Image (cartoon, rainbow, N blue to C red; front, top):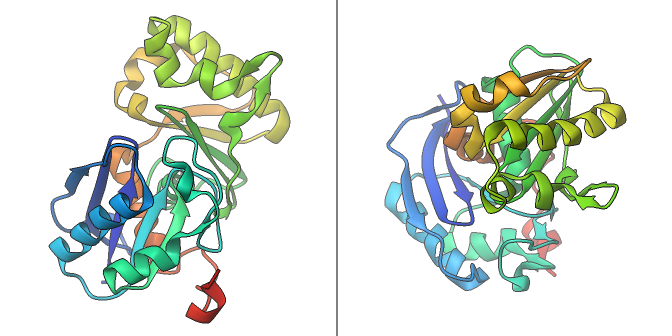
Length: 259
């Protein structure tokens, strides 16, 4: 059994737990700390270090980030402090924790976890995992291999920005019932179906816990639509998978990581 600490950085909370990367199961109770107001790098770094110290696990640590991640650098910051843009976050967290840290986009982490241990198990071909929350995160997976940083929530549907119009936050903001929201989400999914022809859509984020409210209204002609199974644990599990080297390139050397 390989147990790796996974940490999921979210807009309201930063969550962590040790994960058995062979089964996708959490092996200790998840710990959550509120995300510091403004989510500046130094403040988030301190919370990540606190979680690492709390669990006391040796070895690497996987960390999700709500934005584009390339070779350990964070390249966007839609819902966190702008100082993350261009930052070598791998090095920041590695120095803060004393552990080798592997960083992955939060939706990509959830996608890896759902494909390996959740609703996408044994599904061949193209799978799109979408997380509906404050925005819309996306993970594109083909035959179990992740295509990272797709950011499909930022597509435009004619004059509508997808995540601004069809996210769970948009549902709450516009006081939509579930049938009304599903009509928007279906328009968005139909556009993605046209572009990618996935065999399966997996719908995650906070709304995955309320699938009975929207699933009867969310139907497509060619693709199946199912709720995510791992719920709030998906990001933690996917982060641990990244750190364990599952479906991920080798980590660059410390010298290669320097800005």
